Amino acid sequence: MHLPIGGTESEMGWGPEGGFIQSKTVSVIHLDQQTQMQRSPLNSDSNCFHIPSLPNLSVFWCCFLLGLVTHRCTHPSRWGGSRGLFTGGGGASVVQLTLQDIARSLRDRQHKRVAVMAGAGISTPSGIPDFRLARKNGRKNVSCALPLTTENTCRSPGSGLYDNLQQYDLPYAEAIFEIGFFHRNPAPFFALAKELYPGNYRPNPTHFFVHLLHQKGQLLRMYTQNIDGLERLAGIPPEKLVEAHGTFATATCTSCLQKYKGEELQPAVMSGSVPKCSACGGVVKPDIVFFGEELPPRFLKYLTDFPLADLLIIMGTSLEVEPFASLAGAVRSSVPRLLINRDPVGPFVWGRRPQDVLQLGEVVGGVQALVEALGWTRELQALMAAGVEQNEE
Image 1 (cartoon, rainbow, N blue to C red):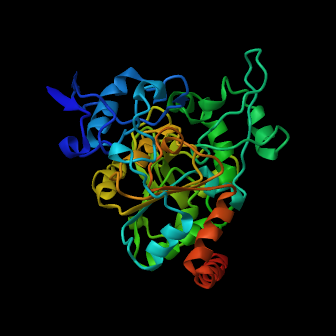
Image 2 (tube, rainbow, N blue to C red):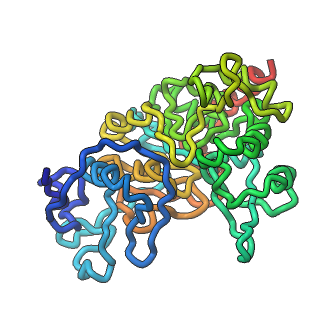
């Protein structure tokens, strides 16, 4: 089957105004492969995402055709300078939105279908530990973004978690979240699970802000990369959550596939043991998505959610883990996108739109700045106080 890609927005409906991508024809492979979690770092030479796994090329092209991947795989020098990132057709200036503009529209309920994307950066203020593992290949220590909450910043060696994991002599950092390694040696993962198990940490203002959006009837859905369960603890209903990389709330026997509730594993995990199935004795694994595993079917809700969204808020993520990262380009080109993050990432680096707003710095501080602009500070404080009281009961 051959389908055209690119062209103008009026022709295809996905591209930026005027269309930066040349029209061409590609062969589309049927989507019969599992959608797997992959890392896809930005290639600074070509301004394109590197697709690391050829078996998933069909996933990439289908996502491209659906509008998931809207970045320009063209070097900036080839654009000819006729169009700037913040100009419309014919070079006319477009006014750049601000945080105050986003706040005003939210407060006036112009945005009633807000999609939220979140990564590890919203959880580290709650104390979710970061860590760094030394590679054993003769090179100096490399900072590794591990999916504790699917990605992280780094903590120097010496933390309790780092020391606990060092005893397992992992071949490389990512092995702790590779399904093949887990089947051979589940102990390192459960050492990590003991540290991260729901109940050890508490939600922070970022989580409660999303709950407040829900309370006001303006949250369409929250898509989170995190596996720490803090969104649920903050009171965000499960039906408003897509836990893209899985959850500790449920678990499955790796042998007989018997299902368990997360709390049934807790005694074994907290005692430092590997939980075993009561039916067959197999290892019971929390329903966390490892590298090489299929994403939860619920992730496919993006197909209906993102075309409906009228505002996208992205918080605390490096946008490096696919296919989650490509969701940032799945909303319509006219939809404002607010990035609350330490640094510019993904399309906010190479494909920024006039409707994009960047609130850079510490994530909780960025959320508080938005809440203050909204005039919701007292409501957020009251919601947090109620949440703390409920979690302590």
